[in-house]
Image (tube, rainbow, N blue to C red; front, side, top):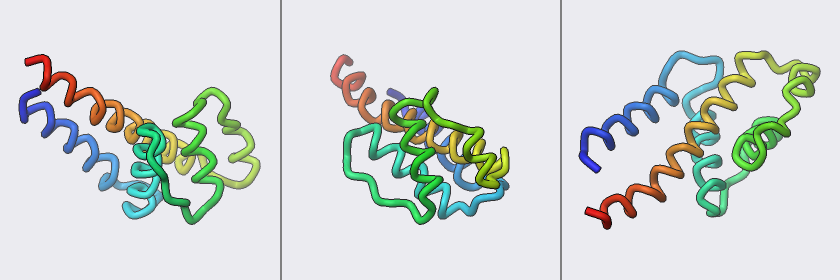
Length: 108
């Protein structure tokens, strides 16, 4: 795969981590790394807030099982929920790209 596409993946990661949001870039980085590790079946560090960890894990393992209404009842905003879901989904996508790119390189 050309460096142009690798650059696009890095740009996506930077945008998710550094764009204005209610969660700090450090928390978003933790979510991204946890999702990426879980999707790659590697050990994933615990997150500081259990609701973020639970939602991140659901996005990785069974997104339709995530009980978004429960997070709203807990007082989480739609923005916070959206951020966790989006960052975790990007983490899963990056993990898939990490696993697929070496195979593409071999086929050349």
